[in-house]
Amino acid sequence: MTSHDDTNRPDRGTAPRRAALPDDETPEYQTSDNRPSNRPDSSDAGRSASRAAGRHRGAPGRAADDPHRPPSHKALLIGTIAAVIVLIIVGVSSYFINSSQPVAPSATPVATSTWALDLPVQIGNYTRDPNTTSAPTAQDGVTTTSATYASKGKNAVVVLMSRPQTDLKKFMSDAGMTAVGEQPLSDRSGSALCGVDPDHNDTGCVVLQENTAVLALGLQDQSRQDLADLAQQAARLAAGQK
Image (cartoon, rainbow, N blue to C red):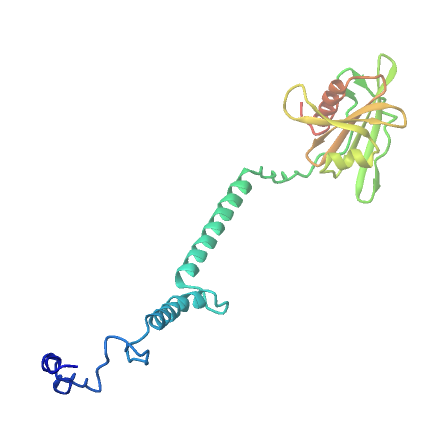
């Protein structure tokens, strides 16, 4: 090597040295000889950030999935309002259903008969022998009397009176009558109950005069209308009415 080369080569011993970094500062690059530097690795920083974000996002999820967590005030309020609405609907429906049902009429008090339990001698075109009237009989507190009436010389109807009576359906059932049904009276003042005596296949109709049942039992195949009107006429005559 020539002296010229030595003259142009920079003096390495006089090269400026790099100032030392303070202890609290880290270099912004990695050394060329792959020695660890103080700069944080970008992958480590990403994982740390992901873990932090996961912890931040996961906290509400764990709280929401906690089966022992009490319900919120909003959920309780909504449930209470729904229960009240259901109770109101049930109450209103029950009211309208009950109000639409017909009310059973109360039983009409039956007046006590004060007139004598005597059958009239004549009822329209039917008459009886005054000497053949059966004597009244009493059983279980109920008094009964009856007589046979004739028309045109032939027995046509049996009239029976029974006291006290208040339920004509029960009266017809106790008498063993079948095919019992209601028969309106011709004057439209009420109705009678008519049925059939199964022993003789005779039709009979009964009306209630105060607390006395008056039954007309046909012996000549009379219609239910005729027998109902006859029973009413006999009841009024026995009670002293015209």
